[in-house]
Amino acid sequence: MVFKPTPASVTPEVNLGDAFVTTRVDAVVNWGRRNSLWPFPFGTACCAIEFMGMVSSMFDVSRFGAELVRFSPRQADLLIIAGTVTYKQAPVLRRIYEQMLAPRWVISAGACATSGGFYDCYCTVPGIDEIIPVDVYVAGCPPRPEAFLEAIWQIQQKISGEAIREQKAIGA
Amino acid sequence: MSGAHHGDHSHGHAAPARPAIQPGLSKERLREILESRLAAKTDSRDLRGTTVIVARERLRDAVLLLRDESDLRFDQLLDISGVDYLAFPGHRGPRFAAVYLFKSTVFTHRITLKVEVDEDDASVPSIHDLFLFANWAERETWDQYGIVFVGHPNLKRLLNHHEFIGHPLRKDYPCQKRQKLSVNDPMIDQLEARLKQRGYTVLEHGVFEPGTPMTYHDKAGAAR
Image 1 (cartoon, rainbow over the protein chains, first blue to last red):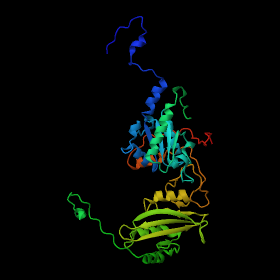
Image 2 (cartoon, rainbow over the protein chains, first blue to last red):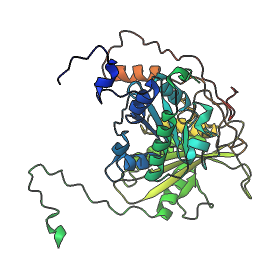
Image 3 (tube, chains in turn cyan, brown):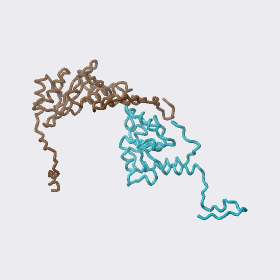
Image 4 (tube, each protein chain N blue to C red):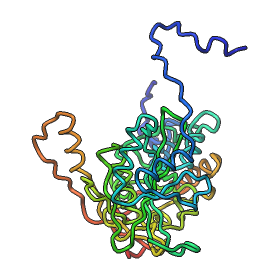
C-alpha cells in the first residue's frame, strides 16, 4: 500500500478511501458473537438426538457458525437443554449455567425442558425456567432439527439487538 | 447363503464354546419343589403360574435353594421390585410385597418369588451377600416403596434425591407432589469406598463445597 502525502489544505479523511469502515461497537461485537456461538449441549433425552441431527451434515449448523460444540461450560456461551430435567439434576444444571461466562444464552429445546412434557410426576422439573433464565423455547417432542436451527436463528436475532452497555446481570 | 462363514473361527482366539442352555423344569415341578421344601404357596394372581409366595423367614433359604441346587441353578437375579396393594381390587392381606425375579443361564426356566409384608412391619431380610446386584436393587425398592431390607450395608436412596421425603410409588403418595432439591449430593463417601476397594489409599478427605442452596423461580421470575 502506498501512502501519498496529504496536502495540508485537504482534510485527511477524504484520502482514506475504503480502507476504513465506520460503524458502531455494538454492531461489530454482536456480529462476532452471533456468528460464533459455541453451544454446550445438556442432552438428557431424545431431543439430544435431534440436536445431533442439527449438528451433523444433513442440517449442518456450521452454516450459522454454531458448530463448535464444547463440553465445558467455561468455553461455551450457548446452553442448549435438550431433554427431561429432574429435580435431582436441577442443582447440576444450575451450576453449569453459573460456570458459563457472560454473555450467555439458553435454549430450552422440546416439551420436557420447557414444561416438563408429559412427565407430570413427582420427580420432573416442570420447565427449566424454574432454575435458570431461558431465551428461546423450542416446541416439539422432540423438535425437528429445523426447529433447532430456527432457535439458533432467533438467538442470533436477539444478539443483534443487544447493547454492550446493557450486559445481563449475573444470575439474572 | 451369505451367513455360511459365520461360525468360522479363523482368527485363532475363538471364545470357548458355551454349553447350550438345557431344558429346565416345568413350572409345575418348580412350584412343587418350593411348596414341599419351603412351604411356599402359588400366587394365583400370576396368570403365567410362575410366582410363588414365600414367608419372610424362608426367603434367604429359598434364594439359596434356587441358586445352588444342581437342577435349579437360578444364577441370575433379574430384578427386585415392590408392590403396593393399597386399593388393589379384591385384595385382602398384607399391603406390600417384595418381588424377586430369577432366571437361569443353565436351564430355560424362570421363577418369581414374592414376600408379603405388612405396612407396620414392612421389612425383608437383605440378600445383598447372595447376589451382588441385590445391593442396588434393594436400595431402589426401599427408595420407591419404603420396604426395609434388614442387613443391607448401605440402604440409601438410589433414584430419588437425598432431600426427598416419603416413598413415591406408594399408592398413597400424591404422585404430582414435587420435592425440590437444594444441594446436590456429591457422594464422596461412596467414591472413597470404591477407591479403597480398588487398592488406593485416600490421603486427604475431599471437602465438597456444595455452594449456596439453589432457589427456584415461578414463571414470573419470583423466588419460591
